[in-house]
Amino acid sequence: MTTTGDPRRVNYAKRTADTQAAFFTRHLRPGISLLDLGCGPGSITVGLAERVHPGSTTGFDLHPALPEGADPDAVTLVEGDVTKGLPFEDDSFDAVFSSAMLQHLPDPLAVLHEVRRVARPGAVVGLVDADWDGQLLYPTNPLLEASFEVMRRLRAGTSPSVGKQLRSLLVQAGFVETESYARVVHHGTPEEVAGVGTFTASLMSGQRDQIIEQNIATGAEVDEMEHAWQLWSADPGAFLARFWIEAVGWAPEA
Image (cartoon, rainbow, N blue to C red; front, side, top):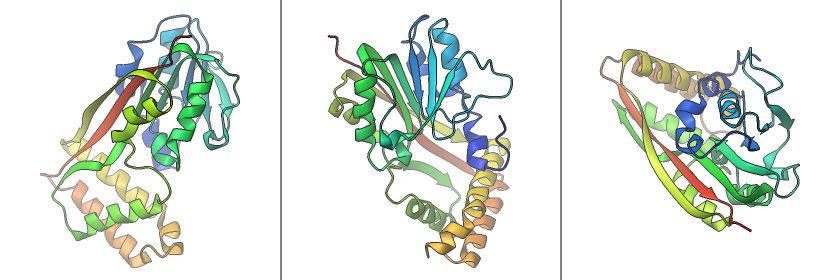
């Protein structure tokens, strides 16, 4: 599987079960059946599969894939759209995981109701997602601030601030014994700052046509914001920190 050409896909492929699912993997055990919802390039999925082997692991996504060199027999990939329901029978899985998917949806609760349907009695569910309402950025300027507004407007109709709601959403969907945690992802070394700055600049340029077509900003303004992120990424004192929220819950026992 290749991720070349899409900076977001490349970024997702850097995430692993160790970096994204440590709060969840301690609840897994060999032999259970697991669903990774919104598995993307599969870099997290393969780590989860190792922890439940010889149990079954299913990855579900619009464009599911596995990392290069991964054992294709270790994970069953299913293509589909979570907003249209899950193509699985009731009570199909002992564990369900989802990373950074709910923020892209208009109605996260509807999807979690589907998760509740396919979760067996006693199944564990783990969610992790960013929350755009919490971040620390230095230095900043009007162009960088404007770029955040542009990205929010591009995400109209989705849920970029869902992180803080994860525990509540699990409760509303019918899960019990829910817990939620927060961790801070920070970028404070030259390499980390250069990476996140270059990535954000590439997002601006990669969505340039869409931004212009939706009258969110002009082409010149997009170019200015992209350049501002490039300058920020080279600033020797730059720093960025953001919240990621984790939540875990259980389907009620029969």
